[in-house]
Length: 591
Image (cartoon, rainbow, N blue to C red; front, side):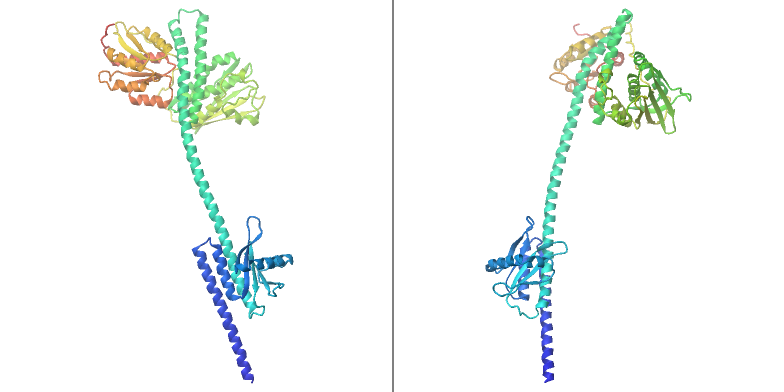
C-alpha cells in the first residue's frame, strides 16, 4: 500500500515538474519571439501587447483581460487593448471598482500580481503594474476563470516575467519614438540652420560687395570736389608765390591746410571701412624712426603752437633707431596720437615723446598733461566714433582716430595701450615689432615739389584729357597751361574723346574712369582695339582710391594712375617723363 502511495506521489511530482518545465519553456520561447518582433519593428507597440496577451492567455485562463497605458499628454490611464473586445465595458467597471477601493493604486507600487476583491461574477480580478526601473508604463488587468487553477503561484511569476518584458519593450518603444522625433527635429533644425547660414553668407557677400561699391562711390564723390579745392589752391601758391601780400599768402595757405585736413578726415573714414572689410594694403619698408618722429613733430608744431602746448622729442642718445613698417601708416599712427595729445591738453601743457629700442620691439610713449581719462573708460576710447569729452564740438575730428590707429597698428603686428587717470594726463604706449634696417632712404617727401620748367625750344606735345567735370578740366588746363610744349585738347565723354584721339593721334591721353555713357575702362579697351592709336600712353585721373580700381587699371595697361586730389608737382613730373619717353611729338593737325 505504501509503495502505491509513493508511486502516486512521484507521479504527481513528475507531472508538476513537467508542467513547470513546459510553462518555463513556453514563456522563454514567447519572450524570444517578442524579442524578434522588437528587432523587426521598433515602433509597433500594439503588436507587442497582442503578443503578450496571447502568451498570458496560454499561461493563465482569463475570461477577459486588458492593458491600460499612461497617456503622456495628461498622465491618465487609458484603455489600450482588451481581449475579448466585447468585455470592454465589464473590464472598465471592474477597474473603476479597484480605483475606488485603492487596490489599483496599491498594485502600481508592487512588482507582482495582485488579486483584488472579487467582482459581481465571483471571479478573481488580477492587477499587475507595467513598470520599469525608471517609470510606470501602465497596468495589466485580468479576470480569472478559475481561482483554483493549479500552480497559480508559479504561473503568476511567469506572468510577471512576461509583463516586465512588455513594460521594458514599451519603454524602449517610447524612447525610440522620442529619439526619432528629436532626430527629425534636429535634422529639421540643421537643415534650417544650414539654410539660414547659406542665406546669411549670401547676404554677407552682398553686403561686402555693397560696402566695396559704397567705398568706391564715396571715395569718388568726396575726392572730386577736393581735387578742385586743393588743386586750384596749389596753383595759386605756385603761380603767385612772389606776387601776393603776406595776408593773401596766409589765406591761401589756410585754404590748403583746411583742404588737407578735410582730406585727412575723409581718408580716416574710408581707411577704417577698408580695415573692416579687409581691403587696406600695407607697404612695409625700412626707415629711420628718429626721422619719422622729427617729421611728425615738425608737421604738428603749428597745431601745438595754436593750443599753447610744447612738444618734447626723444633724446635718441643711442643714435638712429631702425624699423620695418609701412612708412606712411606709421607716421599716421604717430600723427593721430600726438595730435590727440595736443588737442586734449591744457594751455601751457606738454606732450612728451619717448622711444625705447628693445631687443624684440620698439616702444614709443606719448605722454600728455591733459585732463586724463577715467580708468573705467580707457578701453572705450579705442571704439570707433566714441569721444569722451564733455563737449565734442570743442575738439575737431571724426571720433574714429584712436580706433582706426589701433587697428592700423595691429595690422602691422603691433599694438597700442593707454594708462590714464582723471586729472593726471594720459600715456599712450605703442609696442612695435622690430624689422631689419637697411640704408635705403625710403622716406616720403611731404612737400609739394616745384613744377619743372620746360626746356627752351621744346616741341609741342598734344595731350587729350577726357573728363566730364568742368572744374577738373579747368584745373588740368591751368596746370599744363604754363607748359609751352603742351597743347591740351579736351572731351567731356568717352565717345567724343575716342573720335578726337583717332583724329589727332595725341602723345598722351589723360582720362577719368567715371564717364557718362562709356566708362574709362571701356574707352581704354576701345582705344586698344584700334592699332593706329593702341600704343598711345594712357594715364588715369580718378577720384577712385580703391586698390581694386588702381590694380585693375594698371593690369589693363594704363601707364599710370593718379587719385584725386592731384599732387600737382608729382603729376607734372610723370607727364614730363611719359612725354620724354615718346621722343618726338606727333605732327599738328589743322592747329
